[in-house]
Length: 205
Image 1 (cartoon, rainbow, N blue to C red):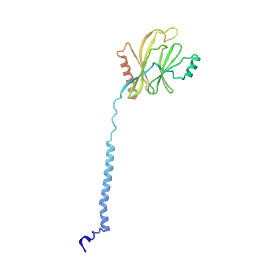
Image 2 (image 1 turned 180 degrees about the vertical axis):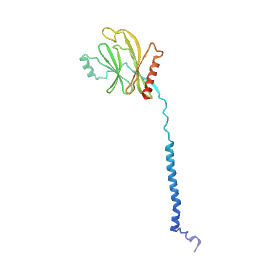
Image 3 (image 1 turned 60 degrees about the horizontal axis):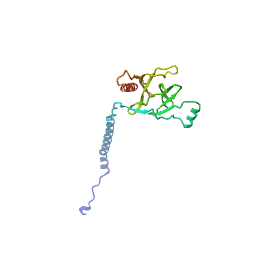
Image 4 (image 1 turned 90 degrees about the vertical axis):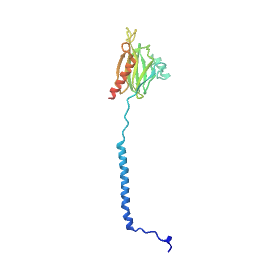
């Protein structure tokens, strides 16, 4: 017989069986190593630390606002001698609603069934804007300038203006109710923002 026709060595069944344990142990070791690596990765994961709250302000206008009513509803209101309200768009789903009586204007924030009173002013109110205080881009309070009046026999909001303040009111979920006197407080706008931000921090603590 020629050399290249010689048969390759034959591995017996016994030899095959004897080769399996090392392969089996190697497989078990590899699986254990993968499991330990995954577990270690889970333990090493740390949630990123939350940074400080970013406060800012945006402003909504109180001029050139509609009524929030249809033309038909406005005509019906006029026919019955009712004053047509004013509704100005705010932020966070809120609107600034102004309703009128014989000699006063009632300011309030409205969102669905929720309403927050901002007080009474004269019918010829002077406010132009409302400041909305934001925490990380979400509104939590408003700051609005209001006036005090001498009053007269007909109305408490009649007569000349005797004082001027900034009121700070929290939106739903934020119990903030502060007032800053404009004349006696240095930089009253900054003070109002500080009080709003402190109120936010107190609510979240």
